[in-house]
Image 1 (cartoon, rainbow, N blue to C red):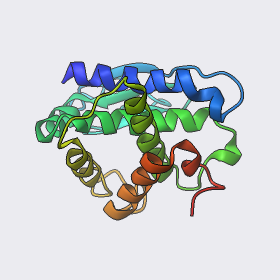
Image 2 (tube, one colour; image 1 turned 120 degrees about the horizontal axis):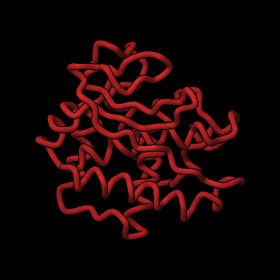
Image 3 (cartoon, rainbow, N blue to C red; image 1 turned 180 degrees about the horizontal axis):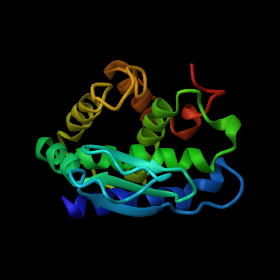
Image 4 (tube, rainbow, N blue to C red; image 1 turned 135 degrees about the vertical axis):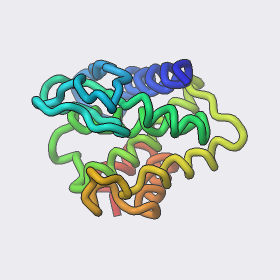
Length: 187
């Protein structure tokens, strides 16, 4: 699992390092990878003074600029398919990308836009050869997205979107690239 997490993070980061200036002005900077935490103890990492939630992954946008995930969340998802961790990493990386964008390029639905960005960056990294998908991974991606729809107690019913919305936005990014994820292109 750790190797897949590293490949996912390095592949998505390499995608942005290579392609950032094709889409945006300025320079790209990588978020920090805090990595795994034990959600049962919920002591670290702090984000905005709040402890992390169990069974969650998040991007901390309070100025700390890091990505973290509960070990149990990743282990449970990974047991269902190795691509699960790729989706989680790419989604949280999508939030890091949003934070680097001009506010006019952020969609009203930040969570669905992060799904779209995840699709764009994972497919882009695959095309660059930094992430390799195997037969059956498309089905695993679908299952990963379904398993992360709005059914967690800390989510409001509309935080991340329902299964169909999440899959639709992910596919929009996968098929249309990053420009499909920007507000002027979102239908």
